[in-house]
Image (cartoon, rainbow, N blue to C red):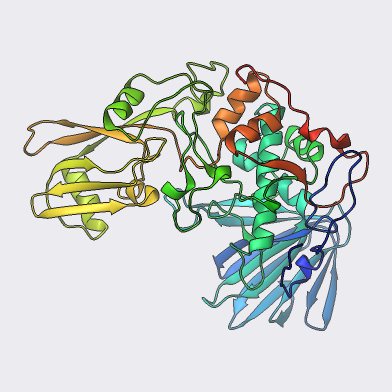
Length: 463
């Protein structure tokens, strides 16, 4: 039995004991019903506009204003209040709510920022279901949060995270991973702010509204309804990345502050039977130059989508002048770089630290993401080796050859696609990338919800 303290209505459904069972299957429910999720979708804008598709009720303090379909509402940060204007009239309150009056109603908001603080930062017109809450945050901008049920939320996550054209079993694996990550976020409050549970960007997991959802991703979510991964009775943080490069990474080598060594986040080869010690430099060089079989390798699985082919192995050339400039911009003015000395590597070959030797001093960079972010734009991963061009004493350029895209912890999304293409089921895929987990409902399900068949493993090609 686990006690959980919260004053938030969204978590009022947390259980302190066991709930209903599926026939013949233990059910580790942590919610007494499907939970709602509060997603912060924007926080840097002073003005927003919403075009309604269906009837809504605008609530501002004591005022309630019914709105018809096709109404356009302009929201503006006005000191510590929000001003909402529609049809020449306006209302002002510290909290303004836009509530749909029918299940089909949705709202288009143009110019929603995404990738805020990352090199791909941009804006996009997005369509949202659910109830929208507008407040002014401490920075004086509009905090916009959408409230919606868990399964509806996932309909805006899965296609953004793995694409709609992936095989069904890969989509189902992604749905369970995303649901697990959300359950963990609701319980741990790791992403939470005063009025939201999770953000809509890569700092949490990407939620892009309903425009990109598809019949295939909706099917994957429906067929895995409620299912999440548990380890020792707790929902796991189901980290995932685009391409592991052939070997996933131990969590403590990427995020030591999040966990020590942990079974559920331990790195392992993407292809069963491959054994190589990538912490050794000579092995890492051979691994990059002659890749081993891997489900995220298009040479192993030629059916992998075209967009995945450029990530398993990659190359980037950086001149000495560019590299010195990158380092100086990060506060390391070491002059021309004379050498790059790899330090400790994790089990996937990702660097834990690296030293840049310069004419005016040295700079040691620690941390997988910090190493990647030395460069502009950042490197795809920290699993790389380096060669030089020009004089050894002062190279003209450095050539980085690497493996994978992303941190490498947890599920390799490209590998999941490759495994699904080779006939593996979603539970088999997940139990490869997250060791020692059980796949169970996080809230009570009806008896006919996927009939408890989520734990029936089917052997894939190389089990």
